[in-house]
Image 1 (tube, helix red, strand yellow):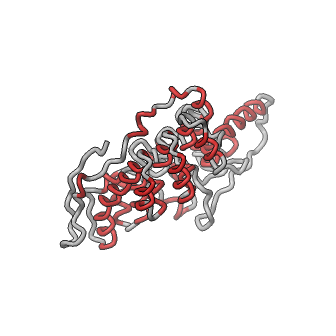
Image 2: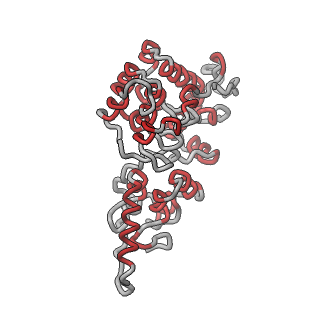
Image 3: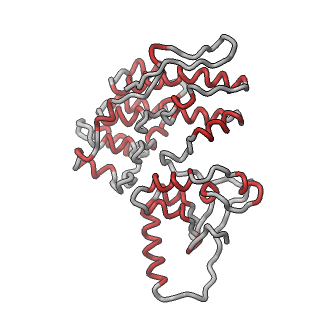
Length: 317
């Protein structure tokens, strides 16, 4: 057992789900260490990132508790109750670990799981990790790539496309807000772009749901159902925004019938149903904000000599 493991085989990362601000605590631990290679080489846990793979004695990872925070609360109460009787002589079974070559569990669908820092961006550019670079854009932080350059042709080509991606994302968000189905249909290829967020973490489905645009909601869900599980910066899915829509609950019921989790908790430990009865607890001003994008199609040079030029910017709000 390593020094990072504590009672019942749980690491500090397991307990983030029980904190008042689980996402913030999870990110603080993850951001505290940059090097994650030791686990792959030695099989020992040396960073919070490696702790994500540790299972406690109940076979649960930190990711499991993040996606079901009530479980850690129950476990804590049981642990306290059992401990009151005293069991000093008992040895605890160490947690199971995934071997470096085995499949890892699906991480919780929480925002901020991707540690987007300047250092990591440069690493991903150096490693030509296009999926991670694309994820930065989907997470609403494409502006962090606008001044980056690369000697690798395929990375340089991707970086040159970022302004167009940002502009397209902005157009999709505007279409969702304005119930413009024709534009949404024309721009939603590939379907992954429908998961793209603004700086508040809202995807187009969040906004269409809040505004009660059922036809838009149906189109987005049918095109890419994973949008249902998208979470904003406060851990709220589109169901939360549908809860305050003035549409008689139609969008809310539709999302429930298409996979939305009614018992999911946001960072304030509230379910979507809470906001149905207290809609003023949800700030709807964010619904009309759109993602940032370079102004008026001033994209980077896509042909030229392959060297990047910084485009004009606007806040896009």
